[in-house]
Length: 588
Image (cartoon, rainbow, N blue to C red; front, side, top):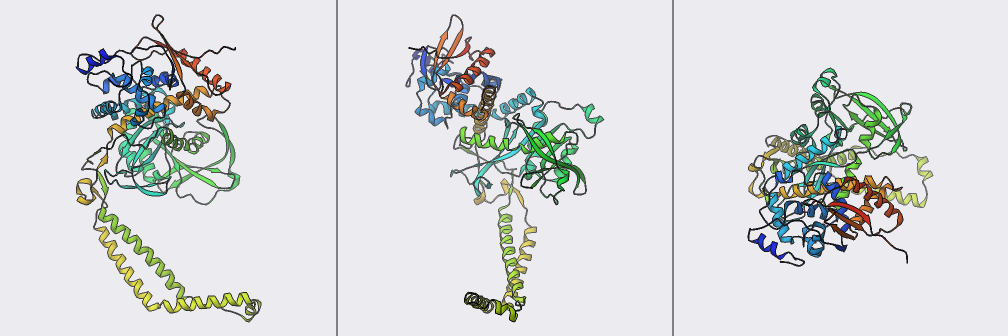
């Protein structure tokens, strides 16, 4: 039965296929570890944790139901359990009390259920449905979206993935790239995994924009777009990787505005053009920025708005946009607050273990996937090396043709000191050695040979395809991709957990003077103990929290409890209304 199992009759019936899933039933309990995670239940349900789950997933008849499995995985993410293996070191009976069960499933059982759910091929469809619901829930938030790629390093030996440049480590490592779409405040909407990364521009046009076309609400009607040729439907914000005048033109034709950094800005603008502007960020903070604006004709084909921000050091940051209707301040806020997405990646790596492998399985790479031709890559590297060597030899050959600097009697007299004389003699000796070791004729012959080799290699490179399909790869260069369905399922659950935590943090900030401490307080709350007091007669389940480290934290959590109690949330699978309160203390 396992440690902590008490419902033997139901377990035997479920094991023989005659029962299950077991009914949720809470028993009174005190000092349940991680009991504070139950405060996240209303936010998880509002974020869509159990919405339409039964429409996309099914489990064979057994002891544990589908809602219990999803609740457990979400609670694990909030409690900062790195992986399923960490459940081996948790008391299964105590975790079961949080779910109304006698115990949670063992790690092996949970892995089997996760594999069964992922193998149904529905995680991507479920994630897309959630993205659709989140975007429609707040159309104003969906009007401006961040797009960026996150490199997920792979340190295993199952497959030889292509190498990617990892900026945070400044190394080229085997990895995959996940492309995320986030709101201005960093909240995620969807994620797309690329085993072979073709670059932001291609992923944006081929996959991300078609997905957004299906998920986004109607922000501008066809009549409004027809009456105003400069009006756009929504705005995409990305970094310099997406800089492309041709892309800007194509997006403009689709009535999609873009906002990105200028990759090749011209000379600095006069300081008189900059004026202070009050800019309100997505977090609600108001800052003052020195901004200026001009129109620019990019590539001789497209007019864009060019914005510049003047920093205190005098540096000018240039921005390009095809948004011709918005005010200057909101556009600057959207671009310069793009670090909210980078902060999201960092937070998810540190606290939700975004880069951790869900399983060690691989799957075949589709034969039609475009990859870089290994022969082209090697020849291109050789051309780069030859070019570097040739440029170095040309520079050295040029120095040999230079005449020595003339020396006058006055300069000799002014430098006629022991140290100066010694330095002069050393310099003459060094020049003499180089002159004898570098024969101009021999160097000229070497330069000619390098030029001929470079011309031959470039001609050969023109005959090779830069990209080929995965099926055309040589056998020694073929590779598999990491399993995507289970990763997609877990990433979606982590997105739900993050959105729930964000909603709770926003509620806490209403009474906190230090807004940056909201998430750290929630992390402490999720790991605090609580008492469970079910009342079947009044149909309530009271979660009594233990006091926090100080009175200010208690006041913030008490405000959060009041807000959660107003939702009158029922625990899934029961008619018990959740009530949150603090354990009462009596003075001696």
